[in-house]
Image (cartoon, rainbow, N blue to C red):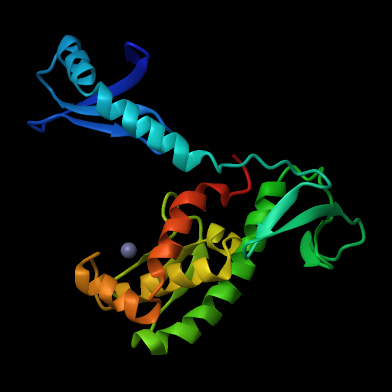
Length: 230
Ligand SMILES: [Zn+2]
C-alpha cells in the first residue's frame, strides 16, 4: 500500500532490523524497510527528514532512465544489434522467425503475439556466439579460463559469475556496441581473479582495457536504452 508525504509516494515493509533503510527502486518507486516497532507517523517523519535525498535520487533516476525506449513491433521500428539500429521489415517467406539481412531485421510476422520472445531468442542465440568469441579473444589477455558460458535473462544485471568460473550474460548485452560488450566480458573475466570490486580488481580491468572508465560510463548512461520493450 502506498503512503504519501508532500508529493513523495512511498511504501514500506517491516523487519526485525534495528535501523530503517530508504531506497529508490529500479522502477523509480520509493520504499523503506523499517524496524517493527515504528508507527506510520514515525515512518512519515523519516521520509520528511530525507526528502532532499529522495528528490536528488529521483532526479538521478530520471536522468539515468531518460534513454529508456518503448519499441513497437511494426515495420519501420528500429532494433539494436551491437550498437547499430536496424529497421524492422516484415518478410513472409522467411525460414526462421527473425534474421538480420541487408541492413534490416526481417521478421516473419509482426502479428506474432510473441514478437518480444522472437527477439529475445535471437539476442540469446547471437549473443552467445558473439560472447564466446570475445571470451576466447580476452581470456588469454586476462590470464583466466572461463568455464560454462550462458546468455540468458539476468534481471537487473548485465552479467554475473560463479566461483567455478561459470559466466552468465544478459541477452541485452548484445544490443550494446562491441566496445561495451567487450568491457562487460573483460569485467567478468577479471572477477575470476578477484571476486569483489577492489582496487586490485579494477587494476586487472585497467591492464586489459585502459579506457574502461569511458565504457563503464557509457553503459551507465545508455544501458536503459538497451531493451526491446519499455
Ligand atoms: Zn563486477
